[in-house]
Image: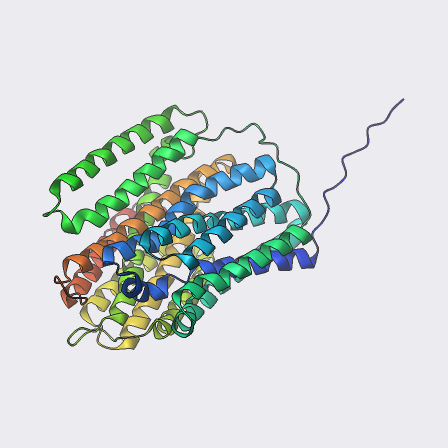
Length: 467
């Protein structure tokens, strides 16, 4: 008589392996954040228009939105560690391309490859949960998440000094070297995890390709909008292509057995409201994220501060700290007051900050305080939206609902960033590098007004997190 032995438990992770994951999160966070405070410097060195620099500031996020659902599925199919290591190899290649880039097209290619880093955190969490008990895994996830945010602060503060002291190439090269080193440590110290049960899950490749084409075409439309008068045929052709891609994507996602984004879920009130709110809030945030560094760098007559890349990083630091605090504060507020109260507070705070910044921006502290409040409001709202969405669907649908929120977030950031770039491009006279002050005022006012419209949606939300 033969007996079947129970499967042996997976090897557990030691503190050194968790530390290696933390170093990887720290280095990827730093690499992700170097562009934002140095956009004006990149515009001068690469001779970019504001629309082109706006595209540069969001292309990494767009790639990440497309990569993240794939990374999760591949992690279940082949093992989290295996996919994580390969993903980080792509990120290291992207950072190297960005560091060596002589022009915008090559730099955009590097940023596209770097966008794979967005899938690193979910994969890290998958591996941690497989190898650690529930209590320890929560601590490890908190450490990794915190170090990723901390890495963002490191990148924001160090990018300017490194670019000023060495060159723009080194602000990409140094964190890329850190990513490569941390990846080698993770590969050596982290135990391998077996594939999950979803080995047969199909990948929605047609939906992914059509969504990629839709987002890229949308960016081109927004970038070309300021020049519509001189290139009406090109803009019209892009709009037709965009409409065709959207139509084809909707048809494919409706018919797919395992769609990347389940559009049928949008019919649920809790989901479409969360998507609308996320889009509007992220539009306001990204408009400020793009315009504020430009305003700090501006050297206009009676406006702007002529700040260096190093100074811009320090001025933006309070906003990074506020964004870090927003997550736990949003969770506490959600439990105590309900998601609707948190979102209402965030929307009012953001709209008021944007409109105040449009009216008063003559001192650096005006800009720093407004940017910090906008970052805080964004974090509060997104936390509440993710919480309310996660509790409004069945556990098995959490990933699908989260992907809808992620797509809305990407679209909001993309439209807001390109809106800011289009306004500055249209308001910069030919042969000049200085945009009119009215462009900044218009951008902040538009973002504030659009953000305030979210209050019409929040009125219909339930007070608690469950819908």
